[in-house]
Image (cartoon, rainbow over all chains, first blue to last red; front, side, top):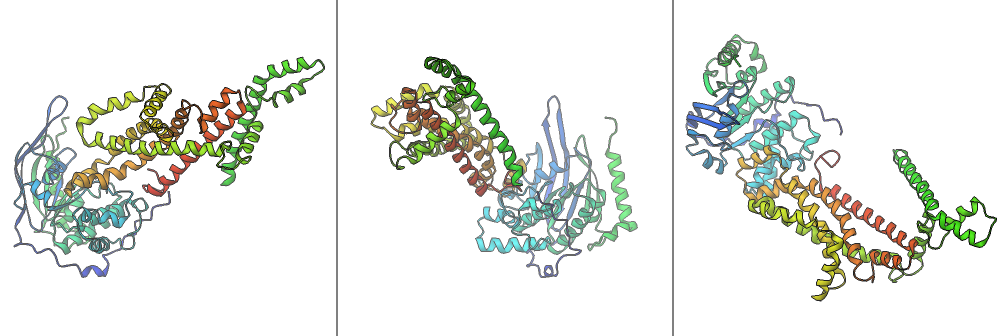
Length: 290
Length: 290
């Protein structure tokens, strides 16, 4: 196998990105996009029931960037999969754009970015990005234009004809983000998209993601293990704890941190203060008795 | 690079030749001694070797005898002539390929049915497996007789026997292949609310191709066996099976062996052709395979 190209990340987004297509017309800011009420999800393991989620309530507004953080088994991924209609709750209600998750899924209300890039190895990068458009019946010419647009937006112009295995892990994950953006959903659900990447690549992608979010004003839900990542990206951080999976704390970052963020912000006292509070919350929820 | 490849192949060929000549001496030796004894005394070891390697109806003909017979039967008469071995190879290849094509259709249809319809898996799969426990040598004459009664002679009965051997590996491989799709990739299809047909065409089918081609190689080799077995009960009209049969009637071991070598070459050529098709169609990684 030829050596994968090094993750040559542009220091900032290409200038062409200043001319983004007009953002999807959104209603008055603050409109609730995701409304989760008293959500409980249990499933039967070999000998005992597992409480994946217990009485979780959360409201996500238009343009929010929400991070779900917590140790393994706290139900953060499960919560997101319930919002995406990939998992069925035991009780409680979830509304996405005022619809049930299933209706929202059928209307293609969200784009989902998985932990692994999940690119199809037999398709070129461009044809991976056009996949959702193909399913949704977009005409061929428009599919190509939109795929090129999104690939440029994630800094991968010129890689259209490559196959996924010719790209580094970070580049592959950016392709999967471009794929989620291709059909222009208002809501982006991201499940630890950078979890498997090295820290340097991760920093770059965080920077790109926050710029992308600021330009498109899409509502984002982001699952992560990393405190720094959560504080850097979010408007609000939801701290969760396992056994049973529940919400411990919701921290508002938008008030103390500016919407426009660079990596330097991580040195600021405000950043440190929020990170400290997240860590406190995680410690509190972590039971060491097992 | 080339010497790396040629050397092992050459060493292996040499070893086979040495074993073959040794075997010929061991098997034909007693007959040779008998023949020399009838002629009188005064013969040495060299005479035995010469005699054993040049018998008209040896138990095991030597490679050079087979090679000479092959050359004569390939060039002695025009290709369309009944005495030309290539003509017989063509007849066998024709029914093998027809049976292979039918087997591919049957195998793929069964696999798709088994994967898409739950009840078919329970009801059909045991029969598919049971069908292969019936010895093909026992069932082949019956197929020929029954189809002959219905007015089908020539290529079709042989092709059906080939198909009978072919479809099984294809069904088994294809069922496994269609189920091999990455769970994440399946979830992705669900988030796009793709239909069953779309998921099948865009995900399940492409991810089954590497499995399908592995099965196709097994099946195409089996199709040659099926065609030859099908030619035996027809009474030796044409085809490599007919040559084997008439060779054994008249004790023409050299003819039998040259037909065997031809059948082996045919099998190698067909498997290689499937390999070429695989490289053209399956693009899933640096080496073509995953």
